[in-house]
Image (cartoon, rainbow, N blue to C red; front, side, top):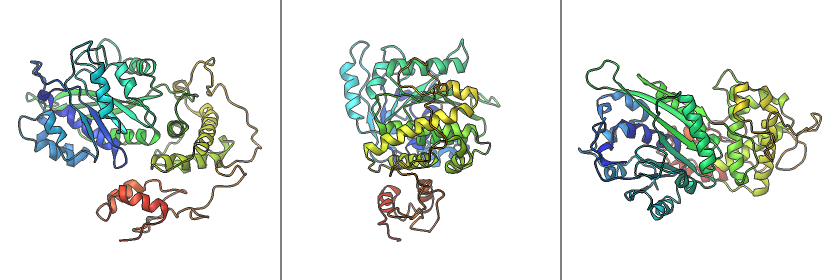
Length: 431
């Protein structure tokens, strides 16, 4: 990242993307791969978007902040914008010469240690050890359980975009140890030279190890961008397996639930159907429908930062693997192929290698180990899934959607980050 490119249309897109991912429950870390020199190129400073109010539909607060930046913008000025979530961390130490950056990379890892989402922003994406690239080794060093690493990529020529993305995802899995990769391809037209349509600007953003909740936010971001004139976005999922891995059970639950949601979406014509209704519509395909319901509660609890025991996470992980093995044979071949691994790989469950479970076996709840239906809202010690401020009843047996509801309706009463711990413990009192 160089000052000459600060606040151009790329920054508008990537900052809007990061803010959409983080929402109000994730922290951000930005590794600028900063270079204080000017590379002499004239393709920077694409700030034509400042005269196009249509971008407010993507992120109004961000648009206004970037438009108001004094000229010439700088990377330091970007850091000082008031659009970053609380606790955002930046690494702006200049990239050292090739071959002498181990200490520099280690420092970046330390500075961004507490971030849930780390975005790496070199000039030319991932590549060899140079001032313009992030290396696979540096990406590997940034990975840790519970974290998503976000990368920027620029499409090349000579082969199809689909082939480029597949090759990129494969290199990330092989070179950095990534468990999964998802890329959102964006293409926007900026006004330039009086051209009616404008000049296209293609930017791809790849997420490594994203959980199901982040993938939902990626797809929502793509939908929002697609709704803007002369803009397009397409989400490309990498080849992912239902595999045993060194990841912690809690991280596995988040990953596997994301795969299950993706599988059910492929079988559901109406994409607005809530997840619990998708599960219910396909209950005959699952041997443990109550387990799937409970595993979803475990995922939601983990996503909201609640304390979940390792034993409960491990049980949820096992049931999700089985559920995926049971649902995949009903999915389109393209999706099955994306999640398939070679049969010789140890510990893998794919659509071609199912663990047999008798269908007459009664559903087992993860929580008790006793055959039972899912508990009703408010049963026992469970906090009723009702907004304590306005009385809205949430669907299913949990608080799915309360974060978006609260931010839209009650953020002025109390910030969601402060309200959620009180709500989930049953101690929130209406203001």
